[in-house]
Length: 180
Image 1: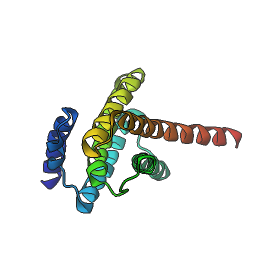
Image 2: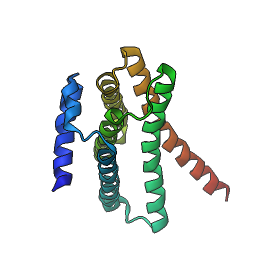
Image 3: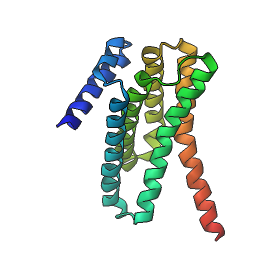
Image 4: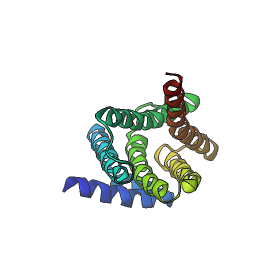
């Protein structure tokens, strides 16, 4: 029951954040416990998405499950690196639950909607990337109080990491397998 409530509050919070209202942050549990809840929900959605995708592609092997969860963990790391890099550039505290907690819920949204969009038409993914970039831009403005340029840099850096790192890993894995 708390899971549904957390998702409902996250949705309400994101609606306000996208309207540039700081009150949206009040909808999230901005603490280590709130971050833990968001990460658990993230991995639950990863599991559900894998099950959804397995209807089209077949059930993955246990090794594939581990690889999928590892790649999704890279998404969490990309968010962390994006925040750290931005904070390093403009100086400020590294531990920012007002960025991390809503950011993980943005990744949950991106993961779920991205899976559905990929099943319909993979050519629509760049539109989803633009949507995620706008969400991260708004999060930088509202959650961290970044200026417009810094928020844009944070959003671009994080989306490039989110999209580029897994793509690079897929290409490296494919080239390694073809070399064997």
